[in-house]
Image 1 (cartoon, rainbow, N blue to C red):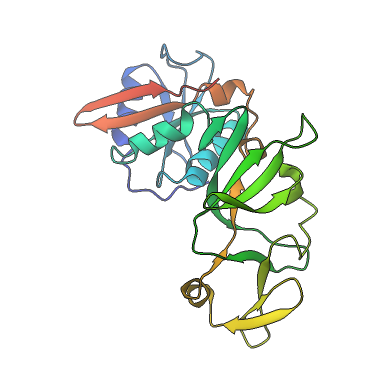
Image 2: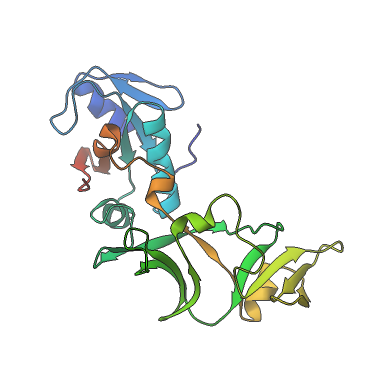
Length: 246
């Protein structure tokens, strides 16, 4: 996989070579055979320049390395460092965890429904996802919140996975019509048309963002996941830190 990033990984590659690693300059860059106290000695490293600090970008980079059997070494711009640290510290890949329930980051993906339309909601409030209590003790509900009020309640996180949610899951949905314009629906039928998403937003209609559910991307028990390192270049020095998740 080719990563598009302005982060310079050359200082990291040179530093790894001084530590005894053999660095392959291919795509991706892989370092093998050296030693570093913070990682397991037999784990090859995949050196990944992170394009930005958005949660999906970072988690996808980690997943790609782990799926290839390598420990991720994320090279992070100093301006993104605090955001990436927060994402990968406890609670790992979660916006928050309180009383055993998780609050999820939202990502750029939209939620496609069973009729190929996309969920949306008329609201001025910030949309976010959280788990909450349910009658099934081991299966918390998933709540879509608008500000501090739930607007959609799903039985479990899995209700957003295959099969796709029904067209009536959300108060509104939109789809592109034959003329190229977006048609807005409520649960009874079409109620308006828009030139595009920007026009919808201007009218107070927000596409529903998908939640980033960590286990959809990563095995939380993976040995390689737990070996993830961050690297930041500070002048001529490369600083490494481990991620604080378990």
